[in-house]
Structure formats: structure tokens, C-alpha cells
Length: 454
Image (tube, rainbow, N blue to C red; front, side, top):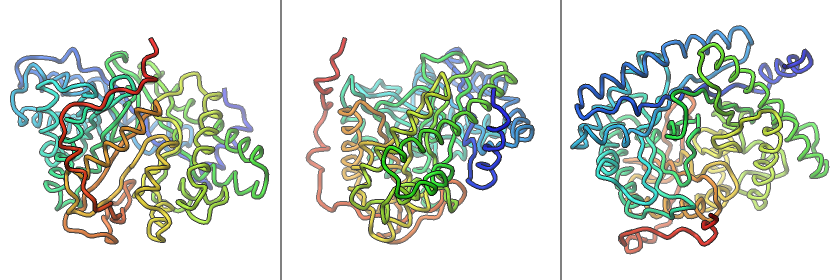
């Protein structure tokens, strides 16, 4: 139970430091919807989602009102659709029809995003996997709330370079098809290595095949809370710094644990995990970059940034795991450029480059996230950036991801405006030298030697 002292602390964090529960995400298994008839499949998918999640929005609002804890998003993740649609889909357009069904279901129950228009292809692609991947540009152009992800590598299997090459092409095509909407389709598309089955955050959430029929996963936030706590220990030793981050992460995770348990009880759906990632927003005072500067950097990207981020990520995890029995998902610190006002500022100052961000992804929760690049960037170059990030995840046995947005019609220094939680992204320069011959090779990069642990 949370005691009265914790209640007062929590109220202060909510009112003054931008604490919120970023999302309650209901995972829904769609394996029992599989049907060789596409119309029946779509009907079963719609019926199951709307039945299972019919009370999700209201329960979230009730908890928010009763406990005074802001719950920013209510979301759904589903079983990777490449697995569900394989028996019925013969063309990319067939998978697009499933995406449209998912979008209708998301609108019906009132969630802001639905994740799981996904394929898991780290070792190879089935015909259904490839059809789904080729359908992604059209699916994201025709839907509002559907998010897509593709896992192209893992520590155990290596990197599927055929899928990496194809994803470079699909990201380019998605940008083109959604250019009238600031290339928004690419903001809903992420490429993974070592994707977790229980991630509640978009755009990468999907309901893993090892999960229960339905599950409640909660993602907490709180960069502003950590920054405020660190402002009270300026100049202190690393020991004091680490203890402060751990204690703060513990308090933030306790709030998420309370919300998760309440949502689970009221919806009569098992509690899955708390994801204790520090997820920033474009709001002033809610920035991971601001935390790094509070630790002692002039700007994010300065020498020492990777070390400071490693410290932050580790202490967040150490504090969070003491507050909940089930911690999962991504859990650490996100560094999305467009969603973090401090990161945007660092890019505009020239302190933060794409190469420095790549180095930072070795120690953060995810990877190159919400980064706008020039619209003329080639598909091969995009695939090369993906391959680099996948290699970091594969070798370091961690989740890495890429969410790049080719800004069609825009050049370096211009800005893509998304609004809301997605913020705005300054268009960053990309290395101009070609990797086309490398990306043109077929097959996969083998798993590293340390993957053989059986």
C-alpha cells in the first residue's frame, strides 16, 4: 500500500514536476481470430478488440479522477498481424484491409493508438511477413491510429539484411504517401532488434505470442521529477547523484504500480508489467536532455553525454525494480528527438548529431527515435542506419530501434511539425557517403559468438 507521506510526495510530483502515467496498454491475443476467409477474419478481429477493450477508456478515466494521477494515453496492442493474416491474405491490399479494421476498432473503443501491425523477421521472412511489410506504407497512409513495427534482428539469430533493405524502401515509401501530413506515417513505424513482447509504448508495442489472452501493461514517465530531484544535489558526489535517481525512480514506479493494479482489478485482466522508461514530452521541464544537463553537461551531446546517460539509465532501472515485482518492456531512458524539447535545442545548437545519438543508443532504452532526415535521403542510406543500430542491439544483447522520418520536400535545418506528444523535429544531416553495395548483399549477418549460451 502507498502511505500518506507518499501521497503528498506524489501530489507534488504531479502538480509541479510533470509526473504522469504515460499509458495503460491492453494487450490482446488475436490467435483465435485466424480464418482463411478475409471478411470473417476482419469481423472476428473487430469483435474481439471491441469486446475486450470496451471499458478500457472509462476505467482509465475513473482511476485518473479518483487518484488524481494523470493517465495520458489508453492504448491497445495486438498479436503481430503477419501471424494472424497469413491464412487469409494473398496481396498487400489484404493486409491493408486488416489495418483499416484495427483502426475502426481503435476509434470505437476510444484509444489513441493501436500497435501490432507487425512482423517478426529476425531470421527470415514468410510470404505473409513480406506481404505485411510491403503493405505498411499504404496501411499507415489509410489509417489514423494504427502503429507498425518490424523486428529484423536479435542477439540469438543475427540480422536479416534482406528485411533491413526492404524496410529502408518501405520507410521512404511511407514518407512519400504521407507527405501531405508531415510524413506522419513514419512516426508510427519502428524497426527493432530484440523487440520485447510486453512493451506498452508506441509505435513499437505488440502483444507477444507468449503472453496471456489479454494483459494490462503500464508505462510510467517522470523526467521532470528526476530533474527536479537532481537540482537539489548539484555539485554532490556520484554516489549522492546515483542514490537520488534511484530513490526518485522508485517513487515514480510506485505510482505506476498502483495504477496497473487498479486497472487490472477493474477490467478483470491480469497485470503484466510496469515499463519504467523516462519518456519525455515536448513540454518545458519534461526532458531527458534537461536531466543530462542537470548532471553537469552544457548541452546534450557534449563530451560525457554517453557516460551520463549510462548512469541515468542504470539507476532508473535499479530504483524501479525495487518498486514492482514485474518490470519489463523497455525500461530506462528514451531519447526521442522530436518529443524532447531539450534534445531539439541541443540539435539546433549543433551540440547533438546523428552520430552522437547513435553512440548514446548503446546505453539507453531504445535507439534512434523520432529523427527527421532530409527528404532526398536514399533507401540504401536509411537501411544502412538501420543496420548500424541493429548491430548495436545484437552485440550488446539489448533492444534497439530506429524511427526515422524522411522529411519529403525539406532540407537540413528545416522543421517537421507533428503537434501533441510527437512534437517537432529539426531535419538533421546524414552522412553523404554511400553504403549501397553493402546493403545490396543478400542474406543475414550471423549472430555474435556470445549468443550461444544453451
